[in-house]
Image (cartoon, rainbow, N blue to C red):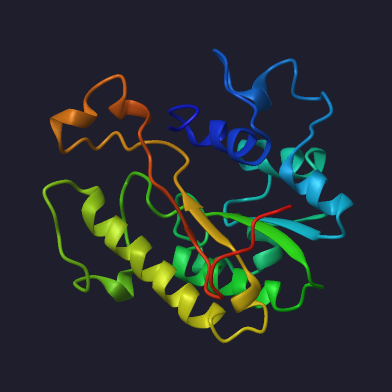
Length: 211
């Protein structure tokens, strides 16, 4: 279940188990409190940590929260450094930024923990001009965009699979919140408004349980 209905709610929830109560944590008067999140805990164990977000730096306060919650480095649109790949609305196109994400991780010391927040599957549900016609339309405008997002993930995993850290990595994929583009009535409910997918991928096989 998602913690909120807005993207700004997701980072504190997913990475630090901080709920959104009436207002998003990053906008609340608690936002300067110390945070005991995943990045900070893993850094104590010797992990290098970095957060990636293809939007303009400062968007939704993600860079500030990343720093406060223990991420050693933040990589945003500024660090990406090529405005030609900006979608004109939210950030760098997913297929471009995820490729950059994979390349940057290849330069990090191991072990590392990273997180990437993609941007493309938001209104107005556009895809790169050069990919127009490649993805099947659907009954909702978001369908084509989601197929593009899936394609971007495929390209990322194709690239990542060639990296030396790939087999030792646990990948966790989830959503920031449920979509407002509701197709099935079962999601037009109090439960459905917060239902999101989450799944993990372990290329090297099951990770041993902690003692």
